[in-house]
Each structure stands twice: as C-alpha cells, then as structure tokens.
Length: 362
Image: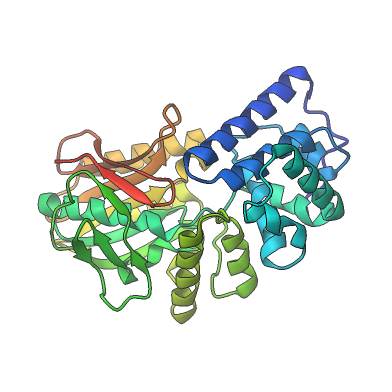
C-alpha cells in the first residue's frame, strides 16, 4: 500500500484545486460522451471527496501530476467497481443500475462508502487503470486488412503496453467488420462493432506471431488479478463485461505471450530480433501512449522511424496506434508503414472501447 501523502506539501492551493477539479470535470464529460453516465457520476463525486476527511480525498486534493493525463479519476472508479463486483458493498448497486441519478445523492453515497473503505480504496490511486479491451482489436484487425493489400498479408504483432494481453489474443477472436468476416468462426469472442462508412478491404490476414510487453503485466488466469482488470470496465458497458469474461476464459486456456519490460527497451529488443521474410513486423498500441513519459515516447518514435528507413520489401515494418487526440478527444486509428510514404494515415475514428468504428480510409 502506498503511504498517504497527507503530510506532504505539493503546493496545493487555489490553483491546484482548480487544476485537479478541472481534470475531474473533463474526465466526467469524456465518460458522458462515451455513453457512460454512471461512471461520469462516480468520477464527478470525487470533487466532493477532495474536501472530505478521507485519505483518498486528501490524496486527490494533493495530486502532484495532471489528473487527466494520469487517469486519476478512473483509478478510483475502478476501486469502487471492485467493491461492488466482490460484494464488499451493496450500496453501489443502485448507482450502477441507474436508480440513483442525482449528483448530490451520488456524492453522499460515494462519500460514505469511501469513509468505510478508505484503506482498501487508497491503493487504487497508485497506478493507472489497466484499460484492456477486446473491442479495440477490431480497429487493429481493420488496419491489418488495409495494410494487407499494401505491404503483405502475413504479420508479426508486437503490442506496446499490453496490460493483461487481451489484444495479444486477437488472432483467436472472430470479427464481423461491416460484413467482412475474419478469424476463427468458432471463437467464443465475437466482435462486431457498429460500422460507419464504407467497409474495410476484404483481404487476407495471417498473424504468424504475436506478443506484447507491459511494465506490470496482469495474469488473467489468476482470478484475483482478473477481477481487478474487470473492475476497470465501466459498469454500464454490459457488452464489455461479456467480452472480458470471454477473454478471461481464453487466457485461462492459453496465456497470451506478454513479457514484463519497459516499452522502450522492449521495442529496441524487438527491432533487433530476426524477422522472417515476407512477414510484416507491426508495432501496435491502444490508449497507452499518454502513460509513457514524453522522453521515452520520443525515443520509441525515433527508433521505429529509423528502422523504417532501412527496411526491405521482403521485411516491411508497420506502426498501428489507436490513441486519443487530446484536442478533440476522438480516438483515432493511425497507421504508418515502410517501405511507403513517410506519413501517418488516418484510417478511422473509433469509440473508446470498440462499440463503433467510423471508417475514413479509401
């Protein structure tokens, strides 16, 4: 458990209160835009916690970084959902069922629950959410379909920030992308996002190898760890909860290949590894770029782009990212590949957890 930071002074004052409060408000609005009004209420209730007597409230009020960049409000939201899923507190039920919708009532309930479970909730603020989501694999697969006709149909996948490895099992999922069917037909993981725009190319895709890295990988075959990851799923997203259960079942059958490593170190290692001929080496990541320090982001970017300048047609390289545009809050599917034009291609915009994809590419 992290030491409470009540006694430390991070210069909290009027400006810090405004900075933290603004981050919480923006996160709540982001939840509402993504059809998560219940989670928005839980996030917004943390404004009241800032001025309460709890250790969690004091830590929020003295947050040293940027609440939105750190996903601070979603850390504690995961802790509350964990209390509910494990049966530790039944009072959250009416909130999650949408029976309590007045913010003042939610504030009061969350305040009381925090007081009663303060020590248990506090460690949830120690690290960012493990926002693994199988629905995002649909964007990755759509990008592979697009790349298939440009640089090859066989792919070696390398996911940066793979968390519990749910997207490192993407070759085991079945996809229906606007009628384009990909993946094993008998898979228990059925991914069919609402599709907007023209369909993706109906092309061949073969994933020959797939792995990922994370600083703190989660073992979904461990029931306690799996429950923690499930707790980060927004409670109103019933489809996401179902996909999480399917991913846990698949991981229990055969664990995804994830290694514990720093993102930069792992990228450099993978770039230096032998590459099979006529296989495209892909680096991919989703909703993780913001958690990597800027200095290391720059080094990862430089390493991949430098490698891209020396590829051959027999051993191509691609980079797929599904990340948040911090100005528009849209989640953009971007692709860059070598040999090819030295520019990013915006293929699609997608809902944060894969509910829909708006295809923009030709």
